[in-house]
Amino acid sequence: MVELAFSILAADFAHLADEIARAERGGGTIVHVDVMDGHFVPNITFGPPVVQAIRPITKLPLDCHLMIEDPDKFIPDFAKAGADMISVHWETCKHLNRTLQHITDHGMLPGVVINPATPVDFLVEVLPMVHHVLVMSVNPGFGGQNFLPRSVERIAHLRRMRQEMGLNFRIEVDGGVADDTVESVVRAGADMLVAGSAIFAHGKAEENARQFLRIARRAAEVSV
Ligand code: DX5
Ligand code: ZN
Image 1: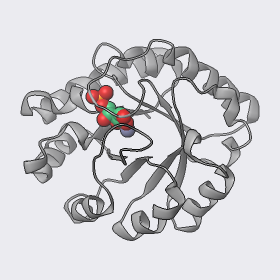
Image 2: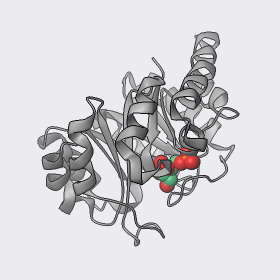
Image 3: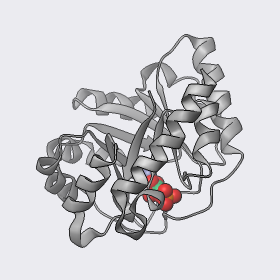
């Protein structure tokens, strides 16, 4: 099943609860929370207090994408704040197995993220332990960037590895995913679709989400 994980980075922060409610009414089923520290990526966003603030306003799972150095240090805080899924960057983890285990031990679903320049094959040792793999389709740090077309082949490659290894992790994609790019990533095998600016544009999250999902589901039907 393809799902929309709407990224609140592009939402109107002064009306975050309304924005989340609109995206949810439009069919979004995962809240994607982009956590940036100004070190791993050249931007700063939000952390556990924002996760804690949105926890009571929605029943949807909270998918926290940690673009931070030393993620291990903050995993307990995100668990306490109510996060359901945590994704950590391959590029930031010295002992990735340990970090993924740490996430699981805190009762959350672990995911690993790779930047566009990191070979998909580098994930082979951790694939059996993850709930999802997040393939970045832009360099992380900002919303509203252009989709990198190589990402389509990277997703397809990951899907082949999944099949060869007999695993069933989910494939998430993040960055520049919009009405004009979503079809290609769904056909390649992505089923957790992160979208920020495409959803929150013009204060019309409900309509945008509905349209986005219509395109994504149609692509999923033709590719089975
Ligand atoms: C980028 C973030 C993305 C971002 C996506 O570093 O990880 O989740 O919010 O935004 P759009 O959909 O605008 O590319
Ligand atoms: Zn993200």
